[in-house]
Image 1 (cartoon, one colour):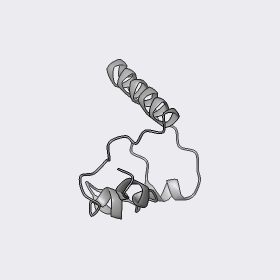
Image 2: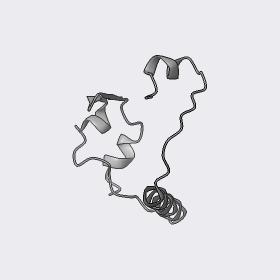
Image 3: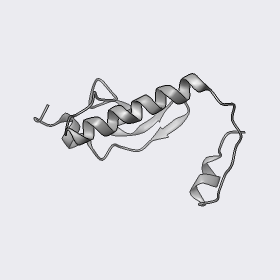
Length: 81
């Protein structure tokens, strides 16, 4: 059962059983290690989008889901890269 948006906005606890996927769990764990190591080394990881005008950056609706505008746009798209 998918989480309903209105339930999420009411701060209610939602529990859901999902099948365990060992490969996905390992992949996400490896990704978390990459993020922690990059943060420790003050590295910037690849962007989630190719352009600042992307829905992921500016906010909007895609694939049935809403994306708020990213609060890291200035750092991500600034001159530091």
